Image (tube, helix red, strand yellow):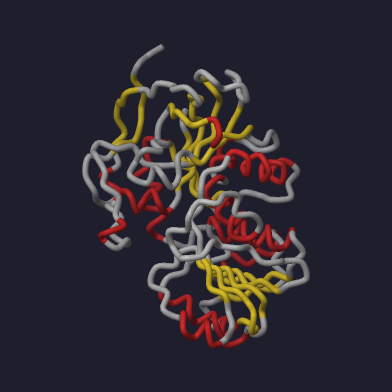
Length: 338
């Protein structure tokens, strides 16, 4: 076996131009791991946060990294080799994974590459009904939506708040999804609908048809209408954008409702939420092969769909990051590995 591979590496923090397509050492497969020949890679916000040095995090939260590093977490591909003590997967299995997250935030996930070694507990069989590109678009965004809305799936301490995140009942409830057209948002719309909620999707107008096809009952074009001026008495808001502006959604919620923030940093509405008896909660998505197997069945039968915004060759990862920086992404961006 050749001991080198092609990968995207960065030797410094910076813009998309620091992503370099070059030779790198092929990973060894350790006990308890599988080596995956990657066919496609999903692009996610932590990829560009790592690329630019996690500037959006407080300094004490910024991981220490060593260069050169290989970014990325989400892969779909074929098992090339299995390590000792792995009985669940065999050479030739088609699999998908979110690799070592959040523990690999400093560049230890190494997904932008032809080969990736992955703990077998973080791997699941790829849904046979979809191709590698669509499968690679699912893991981080779909697990985020699933862990927020359905099942946390772990009992690790919550680094974002004192208490553990707890999903709320969805059947018969009204759920507003902000940032509904993006990676997490388009899955949140589908999951809420699947679980019996009435779903209000907030996005720009060009995404309306797609979101209605995914099950949105109502659509608000935020470029024309301010959602918090027209929506009231909802049970749950899941804000896939989050940040300081998320407090505006408190007035859309009924007393006893919940506001789930995918990106909680900068939220300053805690006192208002307490007065209104609204639960504000967040969580950090975590790798889980078991949950990928569970949601994989929904991807397999078409109950949940992965929408792809665009595809780029692995060598053009910098262009994919430029596309991400433009915003207004519809679904997911993926890299194809030939």
